[in-house]
Amino acid sequence: MGIKRVKTLGRELLTSRAHVNNVPILTSVLSSCLEKGAASDQGLEALISLQAFFFPLLRTELSTSSVKEASQRLKQKKRKRSNEEGAAEKDEEERESAEAIYRKWLWSKYAELLRILRKIVTSSVPKPAVRVAAMDAFMEFARQQKQGKFQTRIYFRLISSLVHSNAFDDVILTMLLPKYFKFKDICYFSYSILAELVSGSRNRKYKDEDLPSDSEETYVSKSSSPMVIRNVYEVLSRIPPPSDEGTEELEEEMWSNLNDNEESFGNPGKQKPQQTGTDLTQKACEKVSSSKISSKKLRSKMSKAWMSFLRLPLPLDVYKKILADLHKTVVPYLTSPILLSDFLTRSYDIGGVISVMALNSLFILITQHGLEYPDFYNKLYVLLEPSIFIAKYRSHFFELMDKCLKSPLLPAYLAAAFTKKLSRLAHYAPPSGSLLVIALIHNLLRRHPSINCLVHRDTNKIDEAEGNKTVESSEKVDNCCATITRHGADPFVSEEKDTAKSKALQSSLWEIETLRRHYCPPVSRFVASLENDLTVRAKTTEVAIKDFSSGSYGTIFSEEVGRRIKQVPLAFYKTIPCTLFPDRTTEDNEPALDFTGWTFTPSVTQTS
Image (cartoon, rainbow, N blue to C red):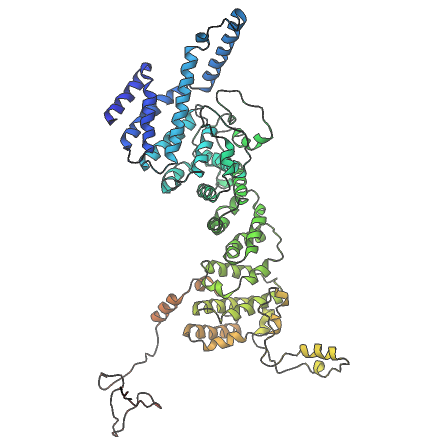
């Protein structure tokens, strides 16, 4: 069908009620956009005409009150005829009035239009322009169906279709969702709907005229699939966080007018059903009683949605994305962040990169929200492995670890264990990692003077009272000898996971001394500066770990190339050499040696 014909059908539909049969024709034109290779111009024209036709009807023939009144009048008329003429004598043609049939037909076409719009939005076949127009029309219907009050049932089906769709692409993420998530009421209803979807708390079947015939159990049964979880996260993570309570007086833009209480999720053509235990989760949208949703209510819905989502079996990629941004986008805005303690402690116990990513949020709960986690430092101690220097989040991890070890109230054995473990890791780390380790040890020695004994420990001196003690049994002899450390042996147990049993206070930082002769000049120079800083504490400050946490071979090379040196080593030749070992002689006619102590005699290989 040509675009001129579509425009003509649209003008006729808007001109006279006699051309109402153009509605199914335009609806079929719009549904053709779901076919591959279909033209989008005809679909857009059909959508514009249908939208202009149904919008006024939502306030008249298709309004909730009109549908209820027509239904009641029809029932009363049928009851009256039944009493006067009898049920057997009643004529079947007079069973329904023409007006009721017309409104019922209009309602079915309106429901069909909503289904087509939802399919267009959640399908990757239509062009982006058609999908955007369908989304705009759908949201307008959701707002206009209740005369300015947001129709949460329609929006529920849209969100359900989005998160269960295979076509969750960039068009939805970059063009559709940000356009509506700037409205505070849309964010409020989105949190409520997502919480119900992922928790599976709604177990009633919804078979309304404005909704498809599939049941709610279909969505709930698929809510734990990896695809649905990824889609839910994409929607949930793009909802902007609530504003602060102090800025609440600055009224935010609302998509709909919420002057009265929202109706239930029930059928617009039926009475509100009696509430049961399964309806408790639906009260999120019913209790909105003003034109302004407070940040407190929005935080409550956000907390419920995120806590319900984090109970799902998250895929590994989603797990990492959540932990990477949880401390910035979720924890500060929850009504009770301490509820995340179970999720974060389980993540922290997994080990590897998951533990590293969960460290930040867990540290916030411990320091700001009073979470007691006695095994926190032992778990942090276990994360110190050679692989941490090549991890993706190493810079963030070491910066946070420096904050965790900043308190002067930490026991000496704990600070000594971290210092000793870091110095041991310096032998396995690249030069950039060695610089980072030296900076961390520098800060630990400054913060905790009780571990300065690790800098130098004379192992040749043995307590005379202990050495001259008389023992009576062989067992006591063994115990006494065990307390005397052999020269050259390190009592530190690097494999021990408990910091209290690592014997770090009995050891010394001999690893730092070996770094004086590191092959990389910046490392050896930094070790020398560490000794000077420890000697003159009053004139030095702590080192900023951020300056070393993102280092690499490239940064070290760039810094060395950019250094200004006082003496430049040069090689002078009287004549430009043209061979690797030129035949040159000195002033005394003796052969000049480029490599003193070496002689190079050319050898001739004989071929057989």
